[in-house]
Image 1 (cartoon, rainbow, N blue to C red):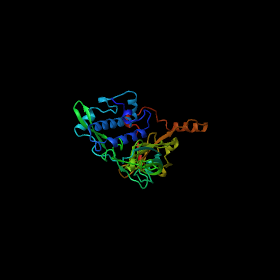
Image 2: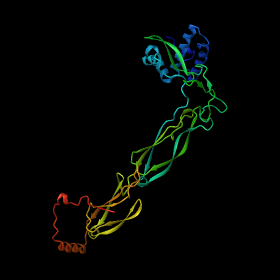
Image 3: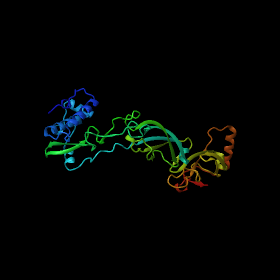
Length: 360
């Protein structure tokens, strides 16, 4: 088998640009349209195959190490390629140069207060935007892409391959234009022929109330611009909710613990508390017990998919004095004497105080 470097007439340390130039020169000389002879056609196949192997860094490295693939092709040509091309599969015509941009994932941390009502945020992202010089054409201003002189704009190169099925005609992307059917002789200098550049831009986020930790919001078409001015990808915003000091979430309801002194639990009182809606009075009825719940209607989290809000459930926790001075001890002794009929003991389950609620 002929050495690929000798076929192209280059040294083994040739650069990719030198490989490309050598191939383009030989391809013009040996193209079947210019030289229909059988000998020239066979040499054209060898030149094309050599370029396919050496123009790809991975296959070139494998070839340099002595590797090979089925039917003597270091480029990895095999059964799938034969059947695909033999039965009419594969790409038809040149492929589009413009490609869709990549999607991106952003993580945004919110406070519980921002989750309750929703929030608008502005964040800066580093992404690919359309090149302002070439406007996505990839060409230097005043120039245009040219039809590939190797594949004549088809984006494909056909050649015969000897296989277990006999001689079959296969087609592969043109190595000169990479299957686009056209080349860019003078690429835009600002974007280096990409049709896009990197830039920072501000992204406006309108995050609705009721989002949960781990939820992802999709922003269609807000991602990076694709190669050659292709359509933009999407941005996915993943929500992270910071734990709050006083409130916790239970679905769309909020839970809070309210500590009250023993005398307020016995006599009843009104306690003002700070909520996400501002200051709200919580009415503690006389005889309140630890575990009782006072519900403040519509003071919870906005429903994500319909109107309205959840509730704020305030759990009562009665504080028993730990340290008493002599005067306080005397008062409690008098109270115990007055209520000596009250005896400690187990409460029946259906008579316990768990889950008692008062609603507002």
